[in-house]
Amino acid sequence: MSAAADAIDLSRELTDLAHRVVDANRAAGLRVAVAESCTGGLVSAALTDIAGASDVFEAGFVTYANEAKLEVLGVSLDVLETFGAVSIAVAWAMARGALAKSHADVAVAITGIAGPGGGSEKKPVGTVVFARAVRDGDPNDVTADSRDFGDIGRSAIRHQAALVALDLLLPSTAREG
Image (cartoon, rainbow, N blue to C red):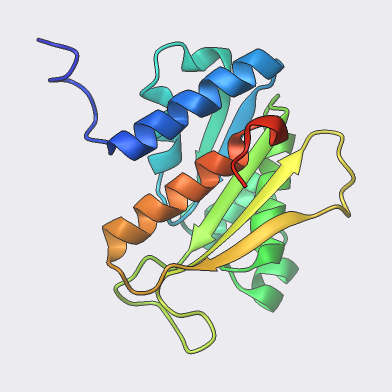
């Protein structure tokens, strides 16, 4: 069986960016972790599709349900109830939790509404929130962003979210503007 025959069907764009993440973090001597919700492991899959990713990729946490966010990553119930699962506060807590539960230097979290249901007027389908945390960084220095990809379809939303998350995993010297 050829390598192509047993490869996960990931887009060229995801694979190319995952390669950049692995190479740039290897060069910087950094290990990374991911806390995923709406992407359901897509970012982890893209990273582990790269030969040698174990030099860089420490852990991936797929915490789809709120209970998993609470139990696995230590997100506080107060934060979840106050801000909702799709919020900067929860994404930040997920990223910090991924660092706490691993030996990674950098963690990125993704939480959002991929649809087709689940959206609201305030948080429509296509809303995805990202956070990036750095080990030993200032816990008050929150690096987070919310994106509205629009109702472009579940797979497309997850794909776009994975691309943003991978970009956030690049060391700042290698990140696109």
